[in-house]
Amino acid sequence: MMQYYLPPVAPISSLKNSNVLNLSVLKRVAFGFLLFFCWQTFSHTTKSIFSENKLSIEVGHSPKAVVTPTTGPTHNKYVVGYYAQWAIYARDFNVSDIEAEHLTHLMYAFYDTLFDEGTETGSINSLDDYADYGHNEDPGITHSSELTGNMGAIQLLKEEHPHLKVLISLGGWTKSMNFPALARSENGRNTLAQAMVDFINTYPFVDGFDIDWGFPVEGGIEGQPHFADDHKNLVLLLKAMRAAFDTAFPG
Image (tube, rainbow, N blue to C red):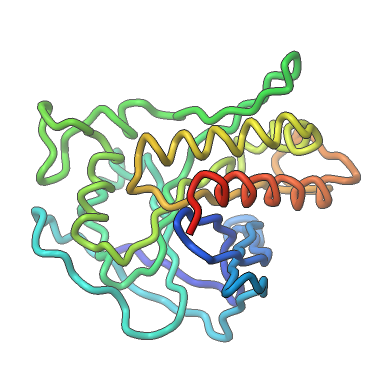
């Protein structure tokens, strides 16, 4: 069995086609806490969303094919689960094993964030092409499917559970090296935000991105670079994302 936990703060997400804009901080459980922000806007009012209770759900192996769309949780809590792309290997836990009816948000971890210092350009890159796009282990996915791999399975999962918000997690414990320089560059921030827009246009079942920067200012894996103004640059990055998403996905 796999457990997902919602800590006492909400995750960072920028969502397309949404008036939602949340801001809070969460540090990964494995290394203390996971930093990420969640923005939510209602009628052009920004506020921070905090959950007062830790929620826990169990997700077990239950292979299934695509069925009639289901509804999500009836409560007003955020129940957020991480799915690691490498779970298809030793853990043998596929996207189709996720009991998404219990979740409100699914974070797919991880994609890499690249930064070309010469052109000050940010971009997004798969860390495992086979896991993301190559295999056909999930029900409903075959070699002839238009989209295979975990991304194809997530597309089917979203069709089955249309309430579910799907976000791509960028960075993580070992892939946050480029965030400091990228977030410090205005062009880096803007080009990464545009890359996110392009990604969502390519995969319209994706609702947004999770910035899993471990960590701004101090901490993180050995060799993680830092600037004293990382925390300010992170906010600027989130603002660039919000502006790009509002332009590309109005309403």
